[in-house]
Length: 262
Image (cartoon, rainbow, N blue to C red):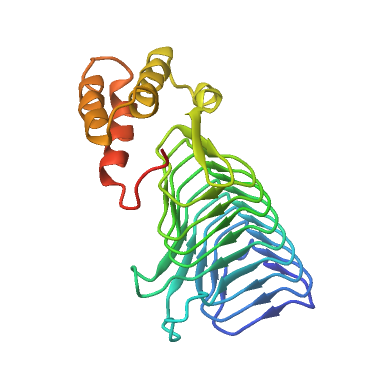
């Protein structure tokens, strides 16, 4: 049977799996759906058209599915979708989407979201990311798989953060951060390839070597962006394990709409 503390409020219309656990004084509004083996801490509120998958750990005093902090929002039934096996710690806030995009804020699987994190409307977060305490991302931000955001970092709206990248603590990111790159600073600047992270995730020596070469082309060789793109296209055709990640790196740069950290 569902384990719901007697002080919790579950509104009519909420759909909870039988294995869900709800802590003291939590509030689950109508239209919320929560999947198997998810645990919701005390004093947490989950509202809006929010869907949460299975085996999630939701800490005390979190607020999920609240209305977007966007003055153009007019009460439309937009959504928040959270996948499986995420950890969302205390005082985190994640808001629903707006009609400016497709109306959905989306969190993938196996993310580690620490205390006081804010994920704004229309953000798209991949899988296996880490948001350190007090990391804040504005509306319409996308965060690729395995990216890490340091504590007290802030990200401007519409910025894209590439997969396997690393944003240092207390940094401000106002441009797109390419995959595999580390950046830090009051106005974030690049600081090399996230080599240790790539090793931990099984990237080969050839792949890491190719990404280091790609970084030098983009950041160290004094090339214009167009010149660097030409060199990167050549590097992505070497017939090694590095071809695929260099191609990912290049595609990100070519599609960046806010410009890249450089």
